[in-house]
Image (cartoon, rainbow over the protein chains, first blue to last red):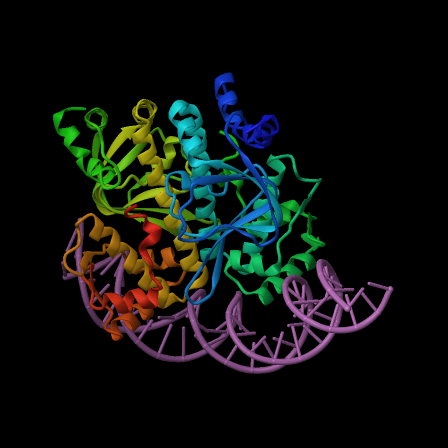
Length: 243
Length: 243
DNA sequence: CGCATCGTTGATGGGGATCAATAGCTGTGG
DNA sequence: CCACAGCTATTGATCCCCATCAACGATGCG
């Protein structure tokens, strides 16, 4: 909309450039996208299951997460999203939501109309390809989570989640040694892993007792990366970080 | 490659046209895609985890499925694919496989080089959008499976799988009343649902005793659709069949 | 028709659910 | 600045769904 709103999309540019080289035209076109910036307080739904979306949302600060609520009242957390990501990029081509997107604690986000994004992708097929690729990595992470929930023990699942989040932070240069912020309640972790809150608590203690991690004040510290990755059965290939 | 190979892609055309209208140019370009047809015997891997793909695969007859093998030896089945689908469409933009694709029993498939598909999508952004959309529906199904495995009981999970497969057949007009072919072993079902073979067997009997389904000779018959959908907590919205 | 795969059944055990109660933490308003 | 409310973390006791292991019957294929 204005000079300052252009700055908003720097994280997006940086993300795209980790896997492709943008031409000047492409970069300009992205920076000219209309962006509406918004502050969201904790647990605000950005868009709900069943609604029709007309825009996409870039996380600028804080975390967001996606989830489904079943008729039974149970909740499955589908993903966590950190700054620079577009959790609802899929809504460009599937505008009717099949799940909800919500802010974890406080969060700021930029909103870009679908129309502008669709024009961009029609004009620049390289950019279209890069965005498409992003949604494919999203799907790859879903496959890994499905595998995590379906085949691994609770302890292994939790270790795997920690490994993934640390790796994603590290790629963006947002890690601090072997430590990252982890603004998740045990309830949110439980619903992401398909186990109960009580069990998350016990399994977390098991990881602490093994001197693999510490977690206090929403800060995760990995004490033994190799050990953690081993019991997690973690292989970062599914994140498709380089190619 | 020749006149007959053009016919191969009719299922793909039909699939695309369920959600968009193709122009003559677009349709011609698709039918001119080079296709190499191949017969695959049961349990043949089409491409394996870690390999780099140079082509996509359209299922023409029979079923295919995708899976991951963990270091522990456990297997998670990620998806089942029926004629007309392109299980590895994602490999266009993520050529390094993070899982394997294999034939379930006998199967025929058409292979299209990535290069030809990439040219097609660069030239025709409407077609690119439709293919992109297909991969997004794929991801939506992963989300639902994750929810299925993470939150539902074994009985509910199995019922949900039956509901999904029936619905996908019905859309393609391949169902026969309330019956579809189901060429899956109980081992494959077990690995898709994250339960053991023995338990699949028992849960299947429970569904039979409730007069919800029968399954013999690889033919599934749904006796009570409403009842099945109810215990499955099934809502077809995630399949994005119309919009 | 012999052998391998697949389906079925039973006995037993365990990982994690469930239920319940306590303690710590955070924000908020009087 | 404290007191209260409400959420979050922690812990214990008990239970059950499903895993595990083992055996046997059915089926289909070479």
